[in-house]
Length: 415
Image 1 (tube, rainbow, N blue to C red):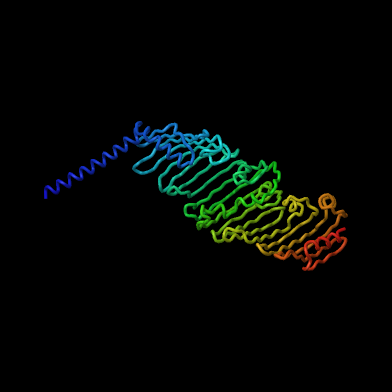
Image 2: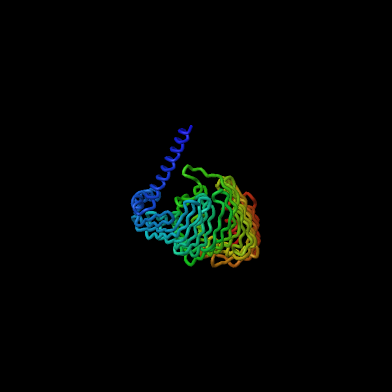
């Protein structure tokens, strides 16, 4: 029995000595200048594979509690970081600096990029704080990772150029618009996203660009959320929106029509991958407006909006059109992919003869009027019911009248 016990003790001792020797060998390999030189080409190869571009390690040092790393790609884009860590608690802290002078390499943007900040934490929770100069503006960011998956995104953006953002989506744009505001979103790791988005824009120059079918099909909500196999993972979202756009024309690439004028919008988007609902209110064109968009399976299907007491001139301006009338305009619409109803009322209306003649080729005197129009839309076409009352004449249109017929009858009355 003593021999057996001695044998076991000897075996345990050998195992312990082997383990200690292995640890010492690892320490010698990793945490000494000689070990750093051996690891440097391995690190260089790993970084090249991870970043999918050739990487050249310029400086590298690693001790049992501190590290320093500096590398470049073939375009001169540079990343440097230094800090410390604990092997016992598996936590680390570091400062980093990234300078991207050219497009390509590990720079994902089509513009120069500078950012620096600090990172700290461990596997359970990892925090990244920093600031960035990009797209001609500044970004302060706080990012929290849970088990190295994005959890929280907190951004403060100041005068970010809008044009290069559209270029990333391959949309043409000619504007000097800048965006500023705050974005706070939580729950990415749980795919249960909630938060707030506050953005406002400033525009001093905007030239409408031609619309292209290719551009209109480049990005959709569904394509943004799909994985490489075309699947959308389940998610929930509850995000509030507060936006103030100085010029609505910056939305032209997404709606496919000319826009102008200012828009203030407060709302929310709620739901999941099966059904999303966007609800918003706005004072567009000095009105009291509510808007609801229903998005089943990430494909917009129906729109409800209720516009009350809008200024007619500003309403036409919103769609980048010269206004042929003045007055107060109200509208209610329920529209889906196959049919819909639109109701429009105009109170205290007056025509603008100069605009009618120049832009609509209609010559007539100043006319004061009121009008109510109901349009029923279907796959067969549009049918109207309308009543026009002016200081010159009255006009009633029944529900069998087509769009062209209604316009002809109306023009006869106005001449």
